[in-house]
Length: 150
Image (cartoon, rainbow, N blue to C red; front, side):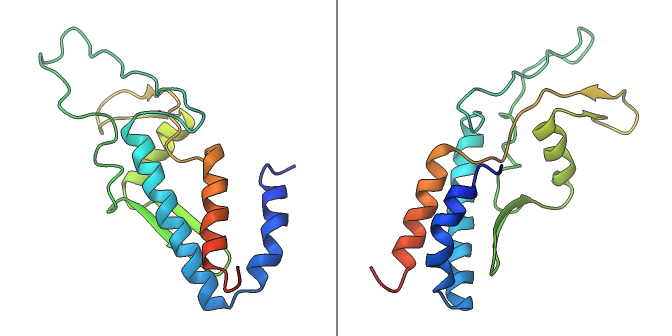
């Protein structure tokens, strides 16, 4: 059973009362709010369940000396790469362009080549996009605030 089924059933009647334009506006607001929450969570380097991301692997001994200058996924969480879209029937937060592949590798903990001539590396699972418990309450609040009757 889908974990969002009770949530969907409760709000289906309320959403059906809205016009298509109002639904698009509502889903766009929900998507933008979700994107902001996802970006904040990625910045704090935590998964939706509250666990911290797996640490980066140590560089090999023969690698250049120095430190990693940026935190993980610093550019990835920018609005340029993380798009929020509202449609009549869905609010979508997704990665676009070339970063979509990199995000998928980290989201599911897959194997990838960091560069064209390097060996394949297994990456730890770091859930970038996901629903938290408080996200469903936030969505309910957005819907209730946009309803024509209160």
